[in-house]
Image (cartoon, rainbow, N blue to C red):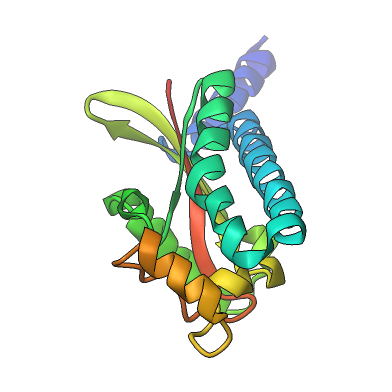
Length: 194
């Protein structure tokens, strides 16, 4: 009988130690999986729309995909999944893309991780935070520059005059150029109240 009590006590202590070792703000694996799938849905849908527009109307015409369709895609997926999605970056084209303090910290971490050789696919982070008194799951997935993005976000020398004119018309305070392939462009940010 004493042996069983020692075993149960040992198991209880091991469980308590495991719980104590898991940070209170660590998300569950299922939260990360759901967030990853949700963000991938948005990125793939937007990428498909962008590739189609580039073929059909060229780079200057395709700007409307990022300007108009990207927010619509994010809003539709947000409503469907019960989350809030947005794209954030340090070099914004749209003023709504400026990161908050939490997103800034994660973007800085992504830049450091990418500089140390991590792959673009690994640039993600999630945690549970207090947001205005509400426990909220937050997740970000890094967006790394792809070739398809270079016609509008590349260097001033590589962006066509037609694209420059359209960007100047639509985004007079544009900061979202000067990128090279595989640089961190920004991230998709997800919030879900718990």
